[in-house]
Structures are given as C-alpha cells and as structure tokens.
Image (tube, rainbow over all chains, first blue to last red; front, side, top):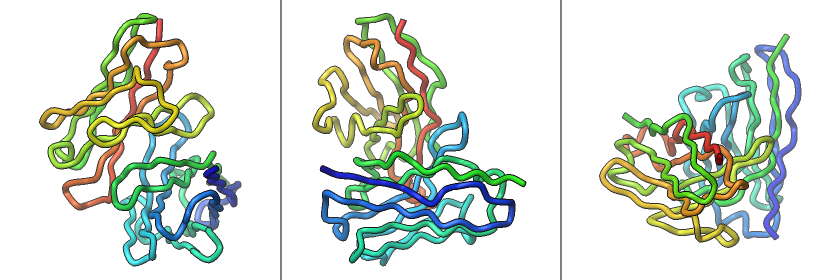
Length: 119
Length: 109
C-alpha cells in the first residue's frame, strides 16, 4: 500500500524558516519524481516545486523561487522542502504528491501539513 | 498564457450528467488530469491522460479534450460526487512545470 506522510508544519513568524518532510512507502521512491503542492485557506491548489527521481531536474513556481529549496533522500525515502524568508502569503496546507515521471499526473498525495506564517 | 481556466461553480441534479471544463493554451499540447477534493481531505486523481481512470474510480467519471478545452464528465451524478474539481497539465510555455486550474465547486442538487 502506498503511503505518503508529510510533517514539519507549524506556526512561524514572517521572515522565519521551516523544513517540511514527506515520508513515503509502498513504492520504489527512487523511480518517481515528486512535487510539493500548496493550498491557501479557502483557495485552490497551487503547484510549488518539482524534483526529478535523481534530483537532476528541479523546478519552482515564481512565488517561491529563491526562498524555497526542494530536495530528496532516495536512500531514506524522504522528500523535503526547506522554506526560508516566509511570508504571510505562504500560509497554506502543503501536500507532497507523487508524479508519474514528468507527466504532471499526481497519482498519490499525502494528507498535507499546515504552515501558518503569522506574528 | 500558462493559465488554466475553470468555471468557479457548477450544479447538477442527482442522477443527471454534468460537464466540468478547463481551458488553456497548454491543453493544445498536453492532456489535462482531473482531481477531486472533498472538504478537509487531500485531492485524489480521478481522470488522467486521454481518458483513464485510476483503480477505484467509478466509471461514471470520464474525460475528453478538444482544442484548448478539456472536460470532465460525470454521467449520473451521485451525492458523493459533490466536491471541488481541479484540472492540471504540463505548462507548454515552459515557465513552470505544471499549472492547475482554479477549481470548480460541484453541487449535487
């Protein structure tokens, strides 16, 4: 059974940092690209970042570029999102989603991790 | 433009057929994928590619595409289909990896 579990969310002050983790099981993690997708309260889905299976290709949405860093540890089946210089508008549920390689087909999602940026 | 446009809200009578659309230039080059999201839950994939359903998705869900418009059709809508529906696709402009539509709130009357 495929499992995707995010952790690391919480309350952080504007300008602060937070690191999200996503632990996966039930499939060969090293064969799949992964994404972070976020959803602000009451809003729609917004793709944030992509990382290929080998970490050789990485993309970011303009809204997070230069502040967020995606990475992965294939030996430990872990995906990460390092978030720096956080802003109020980064407040959202952050979902980790598996991606059929370079297809944009997000076939498995975690339950999400809430990040709240507020003073 | 790399945007995908969806109607904010659509309603359907119980047991009737409803079509939810998604428009954008990227859909001329890539298929749309469709996700269902119920309140307080993570999205789930319901249609991908030309017209494929993941295991466990009822066959009343189907997808189609023409030009710059993709459609999700629910034939015989059920009360449990009431949810938000999002489309996404690769971004043909190359500016981003993927783009999502703004979502459509489906109400089953």
